[in-house]
Image 1: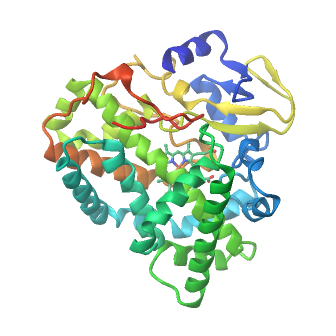
Image 2: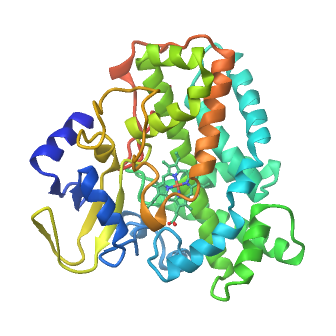
Length: 384
Ligand code: HEM
């Protein structure tokens, strides 16, 4: 997409795109900050479920799923209260404490992967790592992990992310199963708290009289949707970039302490989330364009992160670059809650790969033949 973004940035930095998007797309780095900051003009309400999805679900299920107390799809003051609440449970300390366990899991996954004749980094490492970590955080029993993974995959396809057509009956069954599982898990923990994220959320929610069990379920669904495929793609996109730039891999071999910086460069260079949507609350002017009230707007991070006005030589992948100001985790009040976790998982994944493997190559002839996910704004390889 990047050559196309470059063209848009120069010739139509705020541009209406009808097919699939139905959105004004904001392409320049300097225009995105103000857009995401002014939540009174650019609202997040209703951004979670698209019509593509709501058309597929029964009104009853939709009633269960819709809540105005959705972290990602609310504006202040509701967002402020929700963010404070989940912030008390999903703390950087809780995340940092996970590092030894994340490392243990990563090593197991890589060792299993390296025993196979034909590796698929996505299936063998990048996909199972984040889903297992979040399942363990929530306290999902090992025997339910497989179900949990399936529900999580279906949750993603229900949240306007995937363009692949999902069978409505399967989608409905899967969403119901996840809702029911979460409802029971919350009930059990209300009776006897455990040392897991669900219990921490119940405790934090108890201080907020407006947060219901349904809202907690919605938040747990959000963790699956927001945290899994994104982190999978961060690891996958990173490996693709390193395969295409062997000299950068060699720099990491020589100095593994560069890995955290490499992760930031990967985020900038090939953002797992290419953009986010907002809706205008009033008629607005952006870069000379009039956006009517009620317009959908997409802040195109994938373009902003390659804007030469912000990043020198932006199409060059350089693990030693001083990367500051990429938008891959968003900006403003909705800045990614899981950023510390995603950074940690990617860091550990690359550190442990470097420790075990001197050099990787594409199995089949490279670059152009890569198969990317069919998705509106999540970018990552299908298999690798
Ligand atoms: C929000 C990206 C991993 C949980 C966001 C947003 C972005 C983003 C761009 C802002 C959405 C908006 O402004 O509308 C990413 C990327 C990830 C990642 C690129 C991995 C590389 C995670 C993980 C979790 C998570 C691991 C949790 C387990 C969330 C939540 C929000 C969010 C809860 C909503 C925050 C709010 O609305 O206040 N993420 N994310 N994310 N992310 Fe992430």
